[in-house]
Image 1 (cartoon, rainbow, N blue to C red):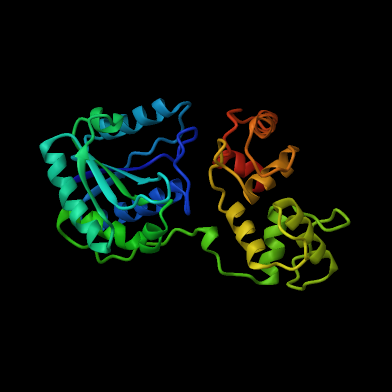
Image 2: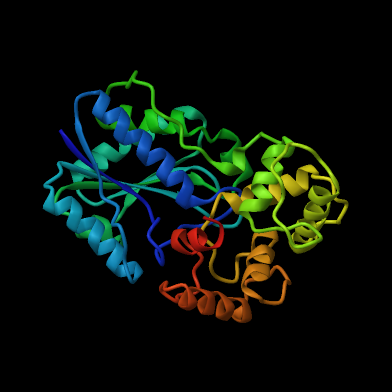
Length: 313
């Protein structure tokens, strides 16, 4: 059987929701694992994600085009919900009877992991379900702004549940885990120095740090500088709060809109010369657009993969 796997969003300006975690990262994690597991069971599986798009509508259209052009038998779009921090659970959308049957099989497997059953729902309002030529489902795995759901979240388990729901079988082949800097546990001095250099944070003399795994005055001054930028009490010592801010930035999350706040926004403001208030407002958006234009990027004010590449490599 040939599957088309759509890892929701991940194509600026088509970016996902944010909460305790970020939808773009989780859809890639789950989707990549699902593709690998399907292949290990002898199926053909392709990604339906476009490499680029100018608008959200174009992004959606290209996903459908990839699925239709490759004549996949089943299209699976993977997403995560976000609402008010209180809603939780899993729901799956479909239009056709075949789609609803597949959706129920997948839902039955996911809720075994402990997620609340929000049911199979009509997807007649969803572009990708209306414009694909084959049986299609859209999975809202759970809520990324729900503490309950994020405590249950296990990418490997969800991917296995989806595959079992789709095929009736469990894939035994190991799947490579996608590295996520936000889950980094390395707090060595060497890691700190490398991270600060990558973030272009210099010492008190304006020089990059020597990566010597030794905490000296230069490294301490760079840590203090970063803390001031990120809105953290400047101590010169890399606390958990400091590491959390560093790793969040290194994770290169897509940033856009007034919902974006905090250390990652303050860092962006520092880099593009905006007032460092931690709020992604019009002034910050304008500075981001100017930076993008100066670096030959699409000036859309969205800090996506290409903008992050220019900022920190």
